[in-house]
Image (cartoon, rainbow, N blue to C red; front, side, top):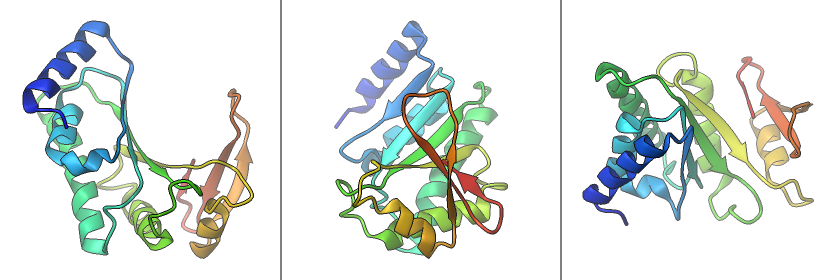
Length: 171
């Protein structure tokens, strides 16, 4: 766990080195929400990715509370005059991380689907998986009535997009 002073040092290091992206990983970074919020509000970077297992989505209310805190940190960033950033919520969904139930992941996806054009417009959801025979993403997409499609990208890694009947889509 990093202290508040450590976060200040990290923010200064990011500024001095000119990092284009910051990745917040774990364990589980969302267990230290005050530090995540400080990084979102103050990091001088182009993008921030938060990697999570989705453990926090224990019910609809808590899921919305956590995502609202992140969205509010982006709003505060703008209010204090920091340049806009891309914020990626990267939820690890694969056979190695799937101790978190599909219901929790479904809560996150459904909330993003409902709010991606309003209060979560500054955030982008991505499911991060490993395409194996036991990959849970296809069954998750099916349960949510989503369609998986391949996307050509200039990358050595295969990318797939999930599109929902509402038109909401994500990588």
